[in-house]
Image (tube, rainbow, N blue to C red; front, side, top):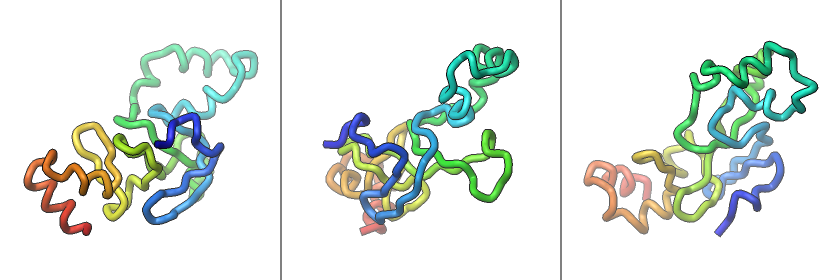
Length: 134
């Protein structure tokens, strides 16, 4: 089983489809990724105030995710793409946008393999979706 400490620095690779890309952040607060990577003495007063404010709670992902900067925009600090996450059962990296690689159900991500193994634990509608992916 892969642990968070085993994650290769800055490389996301889906265990199902082998999509790989460099990521800039792993966590559930993607807007904070630049500010949290700096030392306090490198931050402006405005940035420090933001980190201590309620505004930073505007976007909190339901799962820790691998995030990269949006390559199609200049605003690197606010625009980002979510690449994927870790399966809640086996801890393998899986794409979050590919319906062939994983599914998100009730606050948890499951790789398609773990979903198949535990198919009886899902409602019938979700079971049908899992079977379509076989």
